Image (cartoon, rainbow, N blue to C red; front, side, top):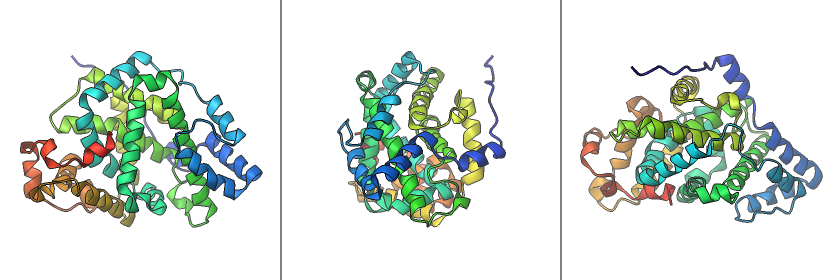
Length: 330
């Protein structure tokens, strides 16, 4: 008999508070940099964040990296190794899940999508953004990068980038706090879930169900990444059941139609369709998204209704559909 795993609840009072919370530690670094060096140097820091250089020209940045260059106490290296082996074995399908499920799933969060839309990068440089996501995945799913410190270093860079985006979004005075703090704790937890639990759920929907051990290990790896990324441990799911509960809470609170979510999804679809060689299969990325997310969320995102292609998803090998998903894993 399979035991039902215990799960915490995530009441609105807690989520409301965390929606107005960023990452106090990383945010304080950006604020101090602005106070000491000025707005020009905060902007200049982006060049370093997007580079492969390990040492910054700013002492406060280097001190932050050095101080936080550790694994969280709960990290289990054996589970992390198992998760990385799982990724390498299934990276083609995981790439597909990320492209057609995880990323658009995030765009369904109407208020969180506003930050992404404001940056303009996802709409105007979608392919580059996908390539950066793929580079990140390749770094954090290779054991050598955890051993030599590159994985943690990369995660901390992204953490600082999030803090810088929060700073600039509020600095320009056009952000409405009724939407929550930019890149807040709730939205970051939702992204963690999209890259971990939602990937597992997508594989199950597609008929390639991972073992429970591999699924929990993959969630564990992303929990480690998430804590290093600055997500509060109260929003780190202890197991897949808890990830399921949290996903339902966030979706109920945040998922609704928005212009930003539709624009981001259209940009993603347009980019993926460019990699389809067979013109008869151009609608299959949209069909795959509808198949994985269901019509309710697909309608929220304005994904074209392609009923016939959706019915054919199980009959068309993913390799014949498009190569766009490969950009997320390479």
